[in-house]
Length: 468
Image (cartoon, rainbow, N blue to C red; front, side, top):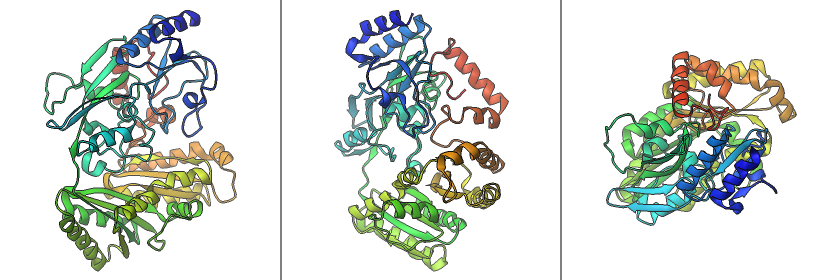
């Protein structure tokens, strides 16, 4: 059966686009190196029609397939299992910008377009595609939509879902649904677009999307602010929202230990503020002129200093300095990787409950694992924390994960649930959190999800073992 399937795939795509030999680690090992799979073949279609042909061939042979974009996911959702029987469907060759409609403020791109290339194509038309992630140089739009990616500007522009107006999807039956509408209002039945966004390739394969564009800001102001407590950081957020309104584009928080790892592993990066318990990175984008924007921004920081909400601040005086401040924030995951394996949590909480969650959960973790080092940072503006746990000093990181990951996850996720939060904010469920979802999601929600899966993928061939 495998031989006849491979023959069918070669006939559909050409032999050069069906890889069965050689080094395939770029597709078969996930970005975090936690999942090592083995595919029957890596196939690389170049159009939606070829994707549909691949799906039909797999359906005919009862073979499951795993869609993959840039392979930058963090929950093991885009690599094959170890059976050697799954087809890895790479969307990398679907990388065209099909159209830009400046008057409608939209662009239509294929799923394999790298996020940075989409940003640059929009900028060339003096427009902005605001989705921004640390992995934007290698992640793809299809993967961003399949996981409903977030990033650093959700506070103003929303997740990937809010930035997408229409989709082209190859269904689990190998049919092509053309929903590439640039409409902002369309109430003609169920919202199929939102059904596929965030479904992690378990219902169909996103092959193209029509994206929402925005005006390029005329001015950007960026600053670091030091806070004595996390409650002060939340108070600064409230003050910034009241003063800047929709102009507040980014509001990131970084704990002292998180930044100490950056200083340890990337000592050349400038640190404009002395270490403090919490450091906030905030950014304002404005369609007004630079002087107007800067006046509002500096007035905000001055009022926060006078009120004691912050203890110090440093404002970027140039685009280069702004990039350096963001580089500090974006270097935290890289510094963590240098420090060793860690237990990652991508959680969402009501902003008002974040300070109590952190105090409570920090104490629970220290009681369970004395000396555990907490790497706490993330998108405070939209309630998304990357609340990660590093092994105690001197303890082997791999052994720490083997011995403590289930217990640490239970402590963190129980606390998240108690504070009205979610165990996955922007990374998705994948294989990593599949069992956790069964534990923390309501039975009614799970039954609805399974009904949708059964209706759209009755053979269970689309990315099996992920999410459900």
